[in-house]
Amino acid sequence: MKRATLAYIRAIDAMNYRIGRVAMYLLFVLIGVLLWSIFMRAMSYSFEGFIPAGWTIEIAKFLLVAYFIVGGPYSMQLGANVRMDLFYGGWSPKQKAWMDAITILFLAFYLGVVLNGAASSLAYALGAHYKLGAWEFFGMLIGSFFTGGFDAAAEHLGRFEATRTWKLPLWPIKLTIALGVILMLLQASSEFLKDLLRIRGEKI
Image (cartoon, rainbow, N blue to C red; front, side, top):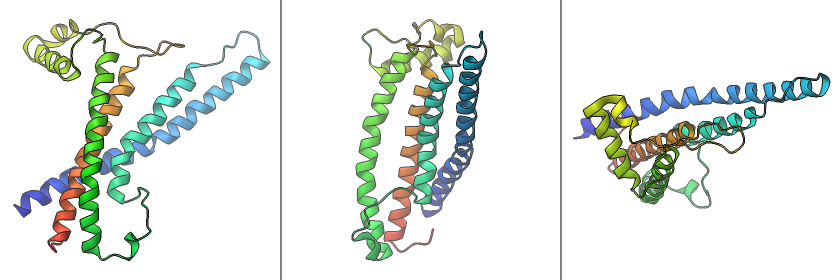
């Protein structure tokens, strides 16, 4: 049982570590997009015919959200999240493990609520504007894909939700948010198992 638990912890930690390390570089992409926006705006002031790249601001928002949500599990793994250290710092490792195990259950509940909202928002972005629950919609979509391929799944998609100004599709960033919350839940389960092992005095 312990071997299976440790294997699960290592697998989740390794996955979120790699994803988190890749997500770190989104910050440099974000800087590049904003620099391009500044350059195009300066050119529009200097020369006629140059149009400011307004879409860059919307892309920058998407990148910032992706950087934040996908990097969350990596931050949790490193213990870089903010804590109220009024009493916590003076506790023993076992006391800290007890407190972390209890509070992570509240986090898991919160993430479950967020995931439900993210799934509903993603379903709407994919064109599920009819009265159908998000999970029913995705079940129908996945079932259609496995029985009839991409064409059958595409029949259930409606008009994609897009931004108001530059009409950029919103489903990629909403999908990223949903996947980020799932990764956060997986990391939370890994941290919970680590706390249980610490409570029992096991070495991780």
